[in-house]
Image 1: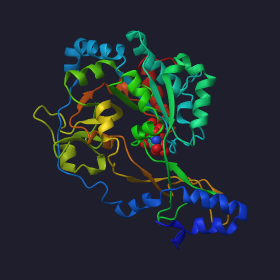
Image 2: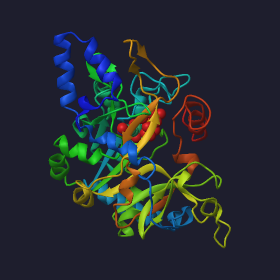
Image 3: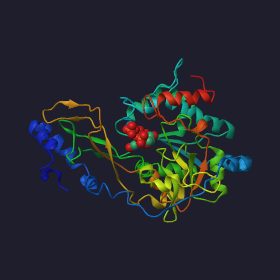
Image 4: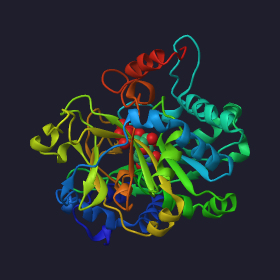
Length: 402
Ligand code: UTP
């Protein structure tokens, strides 16, 4: 696709016209470096989620985990002690709902003291490393937008006491963002508006960053991927790791029991016989409300963005194409008059692949139930549902002093 031949592209055109010849050179180079084919996904926006046949998938529920907890934990601790478990923190998002101008993990979640989101996550991981008596390699995915701030933040805080040699940062790829008509926004006179390409490309980005060698040298066999914004996140949880190994599956997903049939969470189920996640908007009323004989919801467990994947399998699927989701987001841009606009409402599309789609690339998966009051406090907004406010309440409920 030659973007310069597309008459629709008014923002690029206006920028080119306003540029001095020197600036023009910079912009043309920027344009030439971008893979524009991603824009084609706008036309299949409605069909990207065309799905197969969904069916329920039994979860390993809390009572079973309790009964077999010691056995699972031993297996998991053994895997951790022998260096087979690594963790990947997905921190390349922009947190547009939160409206921060800095990396989400630098958010102070404390009330009477300073306690940063990144700090809390490191402490959560250290609960495990202390018990296991070994460190767990942690890889942190950032984007071009927040990489420098993130790295500096960790350095300034001395990695919150975590061994520096076991933390590796890597940067995810960026793709152009556009308005609802497919007109690519400009971020400045000489730069196209780019956004991180979603959290689904993390393994590919690790490979591009040359980290596969590190994974192999360390002998990592399992990778626990998790989101930056759940401050109660248990990382490299030995019981979860042990359960996935004990069941002989190539992946595991932490899930919580749905609070209500219409709760807006993606549900772990099967799709054409393979594990998959049905988004809440893809569920029919019938699916969402169907119940088992014991009264539990048939599709009753939602994912919380904490997955365990077999490293071997990740390598096998590394080159596979993932579905591209076209998502409406707030995109700051330079208008046709050259004014910088920071929209209050979504004003266009970003293109993202999602880690949840990786689950469908696995042969099998353990849906592993966790108690949401203890492990699920996502911070997507400042106030209201899934917010800093609600997360603070949940943290207090877990005895964490703020
Ligand atoms: P979200 O889907 O909540 O996106 O990310 P976000 O960018 O943080 O926030 P909004 O939607 O703009 O408000 C879920 C997890 O995936 C990571 C985020 O950092 C978070 O841990 N993520 C998201 C990435 O690492 N890269 C991305 O491109 C998008």
